[in-house]
Image (cartoon, rainbow, N blue to C red; front, side, top):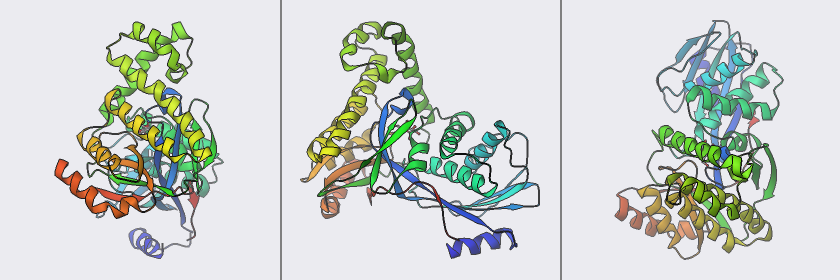
Length: 389
Ligand code: GLA
């Protein structure tokens, strides 16, 4: 932290005005994939990796952005009534947040100096973007005493991603990053949205995130395609089943839904994933509460199959990694986590097993893909907070 302060002062100069610092974590989703934007329940938790932000107002009429992760250049944007996305720069995320504040007439009218430093592995699909957005809004809210509640921060951060960045994401990432609680997973009901905590009592098991080595880039168009398919299916099924969202459909409605959508249609496949995933999340909650790790593992495996076959968001590397993990003795289950198309898999395994078999996993995965997997222990941690300077 001292080093970051030093860097801040060397970039922006010293001042008597205090620097505010905060930390927003990344997240891992245990189960409940691609159903947040369909109003379903999901089970994410925030992790100890995340984004540290230092900020302070300046008297210059410009916002200045610097990231330790993209060193070399301070980006400057003048204070404006309306901000627009600037190419594909990383600082579009904080800029998007400033624009969301403009949108609700809570504009920041003075220039602000920002310094970001993140330790979420690049392209891992562990929500570095939500982490930056929530850190920005949380930091600005505290610094300028704007009076936003945490739930307002979640909603604004999601809107920043939807309207400014252009990803039709649901609420899961921004919510988990904000409301995560050490030792717990969230059971988040996305349509309300409202959460409860479920203790992550895993007994002799632990959760690991394993990076495929494939950066989750250029996925917005595929992600948005899935979103659009779900909205189409919802529009077609809504009149018959009186749905509030696609997750409202029940398993027993599926056979009738197949005759409306077409038995072999893509829309039906997507719908079947959504509906079955919702059921798996509810079963996962019960498994976690009763300490049934074998059942929880089985649900993770089933979730992956559904994301692979019905939702088609996994891809060769994630499928290969998950298959390797599932074949290791002591692994209760494994699946992709996050949006898919690369990024991380998550495993539930007996403590120490993944580390112990690290070289076997690497060897097998490398033989299939030519890539080196990376392992991270995933410990449920606290959500966004101020940090000591
Ligand atoms: C991304 C999105 C989330 C969610 C997941 C898939 O992380 O940001 O809203 O849809 O993908 O579950």
